Length: 303
Image 1 (cartoon, one colour):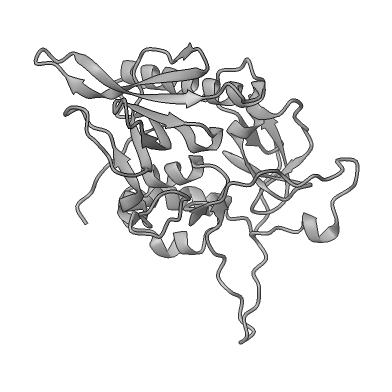
Image 2 (image 1 turned 135 degrees about the horizontal axis):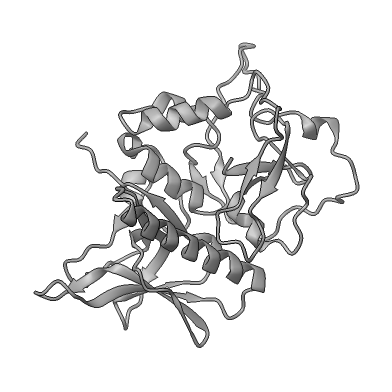
């Protein structure tokens, strides 16, 4: 499972977020669909494998859990529109990005209240007519689930999306691919994306500089002036730095492995940024929640 619910704060937690925690509570997470106990895995900061959550052996999700249905929706979404399902699923296609300054502080020794342990996904509110309302799309706390939705559901990119600082309000318009046809000039912030270069990101003074496989190519097909992401991370905690650097290295290694297996998946870097006004080959990022790495195949179907 890519995400789970924190038993105490009730927030959905991405597996990659575990890299940021000084200490991981092995018993502090539950399935966001049905509330069964799940356990964090591969979360050690030295472990270059994506953190995730797993349920105990010989334990099944509860009957009303949507996890299996979500997996089927993802599979169908590669072939055609699944908009009706996405509109009633909280997690598959976030409607907006909300950056909270702080997570709620809850005493970990205090047992969750009864209203907390009930599944937020499994319980629908009643409307004025007494009928259960459809479960709506939720907000994301980082761009990662938004970017996964962009990759997974190519036929449903007309769905609404609200990202602070980005004027465009649909998945189709908010995302912008960086190409290999020279350095372009962009007038405003977008969710930019490009393939990650094979070279490792390098720490340069107060910045982490990430080379991309896009920009200006020579006639003999050499990348002579690549786009780069410049991450201003000098004031970040060690845990935030670890999360970003680990995720980039994981997706880079995943991309190399996919290439060797002759698979179509490619390592992509997504980031919300404005182009540097003095150095247009650079994009400046200062928030760890506004950059992520995703391995996948991005298709552009004619609608």
